[in-house]
Length: 449
Image (cartoon, rainbow, N blue to C red):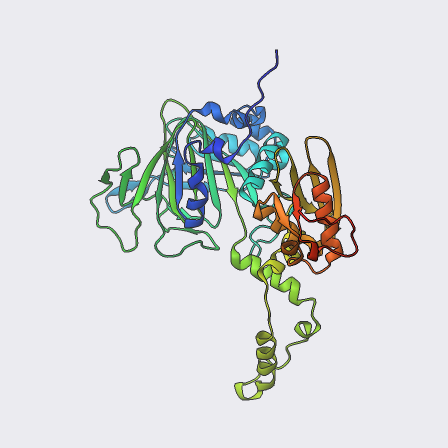
């Protein structure tokens, strides 16, 4: 009898009824939650190394921290009120993390992907589905933390009954929280001050309660405290995560965590995504393109003179900027994606049962690789990077029949274009339609369709 294989981690697996809204929420900078059976997450829950805290600590994760309200920590006094002390401790050893857990603190175990190959396999498919940079590409938050991976896996463990308090804050990365065991409360609110921040922010009162709550299940507003609301304090929505719940929180959304169920500890997998922003893609691609031109590499001498003595350097800069002719496709394909994306940039289906993958032929290669797969055979080609815009257009257009003129409009070398189209047609991936007057003279195979 064949054993059923665990289902793979996909957007539909995470959000079975709301996956179509995920990208909308991602681009809008908000959050999305869906509750369901934890059985659909067996591809993650069945990984032995992630079942409990001791097994994860045995992997010796490079990032271990503790947070929360501990019964052993002295309370602070604010006037007549006694307030428990919020603890946050970084750079723990596995034994220290275990001790912190035993006194009621929650533990975060970070940077797990290199330690758990089975988890990394699941994540790579999810990155491709979301169209994010591949692991190992270093194409993350390019301006401030260049080289950081586009995704980090973190396990969160909270003891039963713990006050898993994190102060209300927002992050400079996006998070998908997957609740595998127990319950934990999240509070979420819209950020009215800054959209899609490039740096994280924590409030000065990390243990404070939110001003207003909205119970997620009923949608009824409820005041949390009678104190006067401070300026700019967000209205928070209360979400109770239970086994099988999945929550997406976009970068910049206010959030914090709260109490854990009293009968069972909480086990959560956090996927921290750091896709590059548009400005980071532009700056990176533009630097790569302009650094190849001598006039832009020339030293900018005299810039810091007084205003009346730097006229010449300002004029030179203005002339360079005025002469810029930017092409978005060229910037993305030639100066960003080939060096920073994974080997398989994309995969698409043209005719029934046939696919085409477009990717780099090798790291830092000037060529791209095509892998064509049909029901009868598999073909691998290497073409010049100048054909990348054409290949990407073939993918995005989703056409089964491509005209020769449309293809030529996206690449200068007609011979290379024709050879590529013929190879794709021979493999059964696309059909090529040409007019007899447009048939290339160098290729006798051209026929009117």
